Image 1 (cartoon, rainbow, N blue to C red):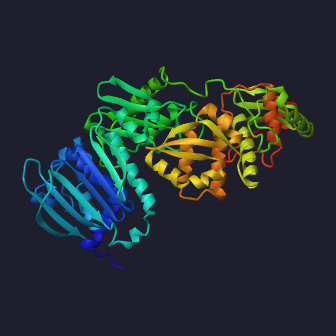
Image 2 (cartoon, helix red, strand yellow; image 1 turned 180 degrees about the vertical axis):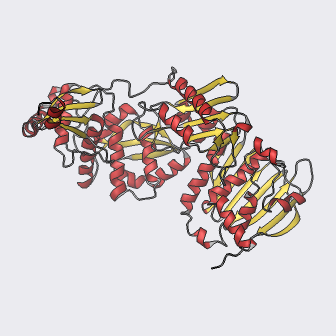
Amino acid sequence: MKIQRLNVVLASKIAAGEVIERPASAVKELVENSLDAKSESIAVELEQGGIHCIVVRDDGEGMDDNDLLVCVERHTTSKIARETDLDRIATLGFRGEALASIAAVSRVRIVSRPRGTQEAHEVRVVAEAVDGPFPAARAPGTTVEARELFFNLPARARFLGTPRTEFLRANRAIRRLALARPAVSWSLTHGGKSVLEAPRVENLLDRIGQVYGAQVARAMVPVVDVSREDINVSGFISRPDLGRGNRRDQLFCVNGRPVSDRGLSYVLASAYHGILRRGSYPLAVICIDLPFAQVEVNVHPRKEEIRFAEPRRVQEALNRALQGALASRYVVSPLLGSHKATLPPLETTKASISPLDLRQKASMTRAAHEAEKVRVSSERRVIGQLLRTYLLVEGSDGLEIVDQHIAHERVLFERLRKQSRCGEVARQQFLLPVRVELSFESAALVVSSREQLERVGIILEEFGGGTFLFREYPSLLAEAQSRYGFQEVAERIAALLEQGEEVRDVLFDRLLGELACGAAIKAGTRMSLEEQQALVDHLMQLENPYTCPHGRRIIFTVSKEDLDRRFQRT
């Protein structure tokens, strides 16, 4: 095929795909325009996750009839006028492509009225064909309505997710922007149902409470660093006892712009190294302000990534702020404390499922008898605990090093799975229900999955506003989990449910694994030699004592031959 010029319509569709990837992209672009228009209140309405309809209403500066005609053309903007303006970008949107891109792949209607005027106008755009402007009625501000996204680009439409998936992405984009702008009032509805109501607040912590709930807000630690005149770091991070199952609740705002930056993410992860257990991530909302000339924001079509002129200085300022916050009196690490270890009995019945306190001799008789039989056959003798994390075991072939948390997790997992295969996971009812607070999207997933969660032994009651009460929990884990709290395990469960699978087969086992992980003995917990031996004995009775439900290695072996060779005994 010979090289040829693309026609204008096809070129516009291709270009639009770089900016508008899915409904969440369109929502983000429209809301950023509203913020740049100095709006104090923004309302977003979605239907079918935004695939069918997106409506964004604001009370910003508005546009007159001439601006309405120009705004839907490509490479038009009110935010920069000359090349030198690119060195000091102070707005969120500036590429001049958002409205034109949305108009190229949907049916768009825009109604706007400038502040200080009495007239509003409307334009309609379908596949870049503009109709209008017409006289209209509206208070000062702008309404943008985009319907049937990718109606004229079926190849792109086929790659969209389900309405629920697309809604969760759009909802996440709105909440990130709401966290970045506490002084703006926000509302979000989906299918006519209110999802978010966040009135204007005076500070970031209040906005965190609106988005994540009061319980999360109370567990946040302030972050402040003003040691450099040109770089200011502020915000909040979670205490080590409040973790998440993924990095999704980590937000970095640079000069008011939510961004993704690997360097900043690495600094945050490094600050929590050794404080949070593996697979758990902190919640963070961190704001970094520095001169506009020190940030390049025009490096990504959707404005999601940035580039710092001096990244090392910014990372050092962030690290200093995080270290100061984590060393403050607000922080208490569960990994540094001393918790009494509890292990399950070797055999249980529905009438007696609670974990076994190995220090109580009266309840140890049968377990000790069974353990002794295994010990004789396995010839494994625990000789001590290393760093309150690893068990040193003398075996017939040499030295075995056992991770106490992963080993206990495997033991609990096998007990749970055995119960589930027998028909039902035995549950313990709480005399006082345990309260947790989830974000809207997590709450929606839990509500829709309550029947499936019952299969793994969890009974939850919705209390409203993203609050849930744990009424019942797997008896095997309830006592141990209560020592560590239920907020993190609730978040990890929601993260698994978000994958869209039903709670069965692979996901069912993964849920059981998360429950076992949450209740297992943590790294940093002191164990008596008796408890160490019992754990190893229980572990070696399993069909698979070598990997945890997540695939992590439990035992590392140093053979006698290796030791002899290192000490030159061969």
